[in-house]
Figure 1 (cartoon, one colour):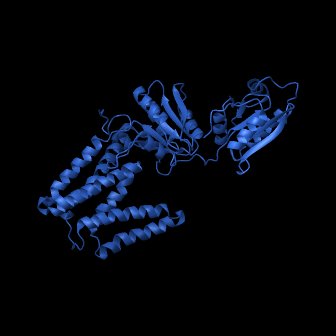
Figure 2: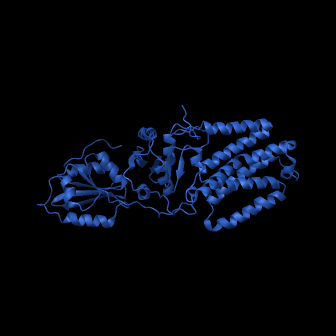
Figure 3: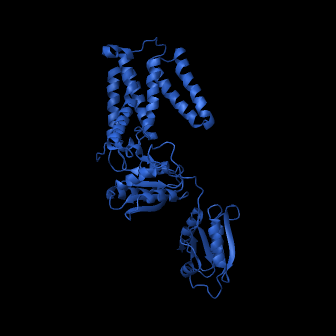
Length: 453
């Protein structure tokens, strides 16, 4: 780790220390460029691939025109008079210098100046701004977050032209030193929540954020393994993040992550999506209601079906048609559990299948899993129908983590119902309610937005 050593007026000493700390000779992309500016020796340090070549050519062209008679007295005056660029800073600590160099900033040492001149003409490799695949909107904007944090903050700033929009930049990780931006509206944010978020981020002591946003989420709030419901809401849409900022929420951006973390979170926030805001009020309410109803059905449909199949005398005559008519070769609980695992297997296979083959392979898998699995006697048609509904209904809400949390709740309901009949089903329902009510989030509130002590 770099120490608090100060930059000296000797370029040779500064360059020697930089070459001692940085692997200039061993790493091809860390470059030292020595040149003569106004009769004095100077050294540039920068990362190849992070610097805008056209901008640096223009800056160097201006520096070559500086004569010995026109050399300013100090680095601050030099940056004002001789560097025709906007983002220029003066650094006096090697810790700041090394952090800037490794972040892509070009740093300049000049003989006789007891400071380093940092020229922020960096550019990061980035993909084009496009609509995210998972969080699509029928009528909304078609842009989405990318892996570069500056682009992401610009997408939100473009939507909110208000001086109260504040974006605080900090770093997390002793080795990775990952940039983290805390975004909020100064006149609308919950100050207690904001202070909690700021203090927790400052108190994080970790070597690196290996998985970027997910690593930060785990550092911010230690989740309990037995409660699968997510603590944070994530979105890849800048319009959704901007709407949450205007509602007084806090948005956290992490460099190298194409999504925003939104606080505070409730179950009602989790099941919302952008389409709810792009339609008239009545249509939006209908979409929310239908999504909520389908979400509840994904949890309780198959357990209720299993409960009635174990107690056929409970089944009203009007619903006799839902009873399994064919011979049951494998117990219903095992059929349901096998299909739960098989659906996840198909989902994982789809993620790793080349796009040109995904459609034909999906058709083949559908035929095999559907028709032939029923004819072979492994599964009953009714079980296949209900599991097909559950598999498709999981995609009605955009939150991936919430989908798996609901899946785990459904699995425990199935197992308890199979083992203890209606008593197990009632116990499973109680577990679901308790998991929601006592799922404490970073704001100190639970999923029902009730303050917890």
